[in-house]
Image 1 (cartoon, rainbow, N blue to C red):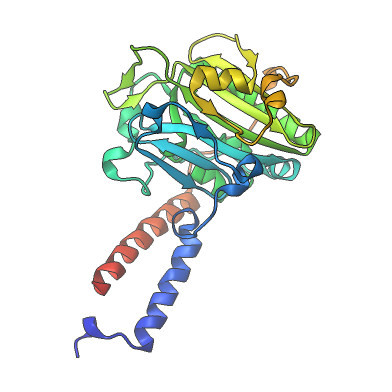
Image 2 (cartoon, helix red, strand yellow):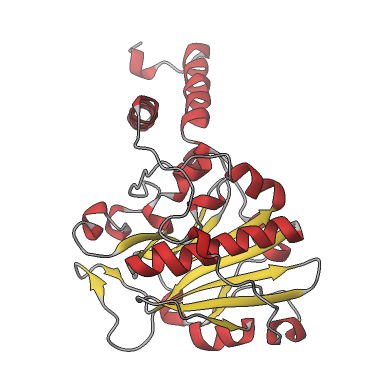
Length: 302
């Protein structure tokens, strides 16, 4: 019998060993994870814009969920359950920029690093890297499936301040649900290389389940420090997204008092940043080796 045709205990042990290796190296890809913990009441946001809802993929990462659009080649939203403990843990994680294309998506649907290169637009996180409680979850946040083209001034100043204020609110309140995403408005939406749509505005919806109140930050994807606080009902009317579908109309119509964006986080804020080192390179090499091993293993079965 050829080696290829063997299906006894040795093959089973090899398969089990490889699966364990993949679980350690590729947790976001291999481990089955439900997204329900990222959604208020376990219910996914609803898109009421039929054109946007076409060609979408739900990606469940370790600390957030993304609904990715193969048409826009951006996320349509990122959902998180922020707790005080998670934010405190995130403060101890140094930022390491590790932008990468999303291997879970079909190649034709992915945004690429080349789309952003030399464009003048920042690669803006929807689920912020500063919300991530471990190096592994932070690395996942740098997937381009979680990224939109963002005005550099907005990304590094006002939006960074909004993200910081929401983290501070999570520490104060103990528990928040957050949905962040882009809006594409009008008939003349621009794109990067004719592939990645550039949002006209960005939103961050916040829900405090303990107090039964919610509100939305809304800002133009442009230079400046102007922002609005709107209701969930207004967001649904403007952007075609119902961020927290299970909430009663009384909550959806009211605007909770949202904290002002924190200016101390402007221009990247005080969080430390380091260049990728040897361990980062080694982890990337291990991920690539694991993917190759997984493909070879699948080929051996068929």
